[in-house]
Length: 456
Image (cartoon, rainbow, N blue to C red; front, side, top):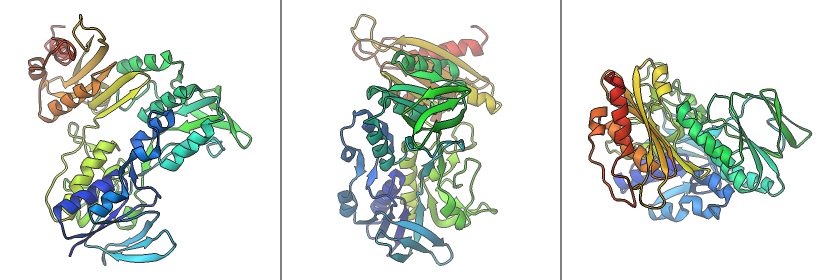
């Protein structure tokens, strides 16, 4: 009987275990998680803070009953402290302090990532938090009972979702961002400005190109110094990204890539340090795993929940003796904040140019429903394409509604190799309550096509 050990009870780990069970009905499967909670959605934590999600239980995606029904052993508050690759033995410290040695036939590393704080003075003061775990979230919520002013450091998706949550809790909120625009990894500056306008309309102050220099206070935080400015704060939430937990993999002699994550092949097998050849029966999935960007073909680790689940499926099938490959990522992202929807997929214009690509883009603001139908809202879409081949390489969308469907459609367009001509001629549906007769994606493609042909 095959024994499969999954390190991490997160989204990637739970998915890997579930698909391993579907592939091998007889295997013994053990999932080891170091938190006291069953698998939950980290993406939902900002909405628990805002009150849109009413209880922690609603965020639990894989309940203990699921693992029991799937005949998967779930070890919570336990930690894998060492793995001997040669003998295929893992050392696990259990919740009661006991240390067990677990033999395995295949192992899946879903060790995830941890929140990262900039190395500046005052980050250890009371009132300064990150938002990565349930315990982080509960600590923030307790502090909010007496807070009046909050500072969010970092204007990525999590930072802005937290800022929205704090504003909904009636705090005075300031967002501090090092880069020259918000959502810098997902949007070009012209699209980001539309999101920033919505943020500022809700009374949130946005400070761009402001590095955090210090967090001040006695024992408790009182202010944040950023770019020479001092901003009052009773609570600070640091959302400056995460760092992959690769230490366990490194002790096993696994390779770490340029993204700081563990290198993998298309079957999500770990690669050996130095030789970069696949390590049999050792797989990686989720935020700790590096893959490849489907457009640029460069190493990629978007560390998104959707990517973690897709990776977990592939790793679980292969670890159980099946065959499945992971094609890579586009970093497809979507969020809703401050009353608007935002999303992107593929490369931004800025990212493409950094890679040395010559691109052309088209941008259109249009209606989400027929002009005469009540309730329509604006949506702005931007399509980015290779200037020579006219193949679509990216898309961004910001608007009042109907954003995610368009972003998902463009992810499929990129994966299938569609060109601007293909998109401009696409047969989109229409009905007055749901869409206009003209599709903004096609209009944006036509605009980009005219630029490429020198007719704009």
